[in-house]
Image 1: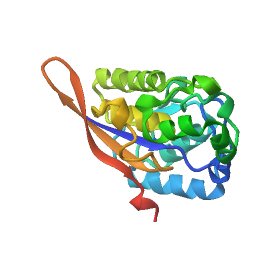
Image 2: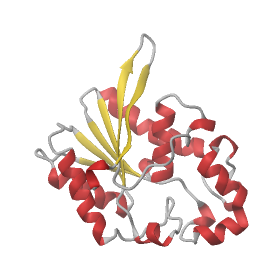
Image 3: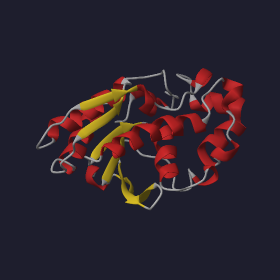
Image 4: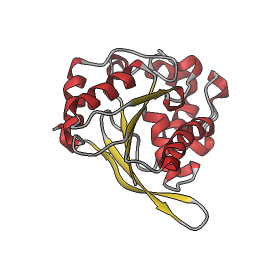
Length: 209
């Protein structure tokens, strides 16, 4: 079974280099709607059974825009479990300004999640974000009627996809972070005792140009 993943369209805060996180949100840029349409046209013939989306408005609008382009539009399941990593006091703040205060933890968040400790700014542990997103994916797979599309966010979805594919915390960012409206694919692999996932496509946005 193939599982498709995308990050929401680019927002005003993305452009302004501000943290959004779990509770923060900002409008999609006008150009993002065209990119969402292109993404939808790229996957329009995939016979999705359902779309799962974060409840954040930027992800919700992305999921709805993709669904409008599908040959067979499907039900969208909105869930808080697909939300972005909770960033506490960083949400809504300038990345540049916060780096002056939390430079070490911001480096760990971007490059070495095994060393990431968000307690200093009251953020969410990365393990918690991975767990909630992985649970959504695994519950969908257990139903056995995919393929599915998951619409989420840059930091949390990057970590969850790479974790499902078998990487440890230290390597979750080794291939970089998800770009807006990019496409990634995991394929399920069954062994005798457990469900596995193989990364087939990562962070492809070639269809946007």
